[in-house]
Length: 276
Ligand SMILES: [Zn+2]
Image (cartoon, rainbow, N blue to C red; front, top):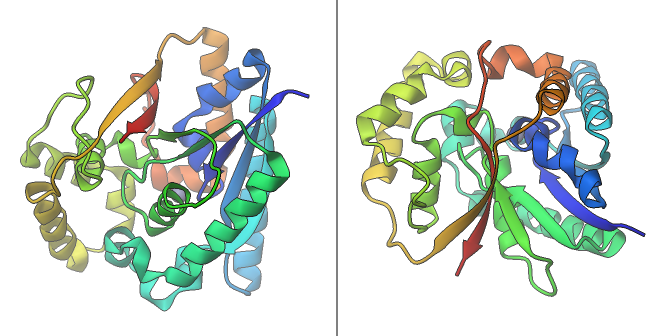
């Protein structure tokens, strides 16, 4: 039996948007990849039911293009789960301890996934972009007690495509900015943030000041640096790999208009290990 690697995806598209090349190469390394998606349900309405059915089908298509398997955990997506997670500021500025019940649920689900799949490694979201659902998964796996396999973290795309978003997240975690990453100043990040397609589509004009003031506060007053990170980078991919990973990302047809500009080329695909 081949070794299993467990990838944790908050929503249906996160792992495929963030680390498709790693997924594609797992089978070449003789490993089996399972993508466990956590927030796979909306509210009880027919519209929400249809949307999540569509997203599930898109996900199955993308995962099969990459030759990996999926697993749906069945938790409810932030805006349908909690009245306090409806707006853009609520979703990107809330801390994981604002939803303790979901945090406990995720930890229970993680424990059963560990028993069921016995993974040799876990690939989890770093939480770039600070979507509450991504932060909850990050917090749950990093604070899970007991025998947890080695962990690596992916940069959450499309949020990580905003220049400086990775730098901000690393600073929030008290991690030194890795040498591979060019350090940016606040105005660079502010400009890039407002140019991002998802920000343009989802952030209401009246919420802009609140969001940018809070992000600037976080940028300028990070916690003390106590940890470092090291990285494993995949950048030279073949034409066949490039077209296959693009095809997989394009399978998420219902999400592309919100999240991606036409040109979404990336320099490299990195997984990070946090060193204590
Ligand atoms: Zn997500």
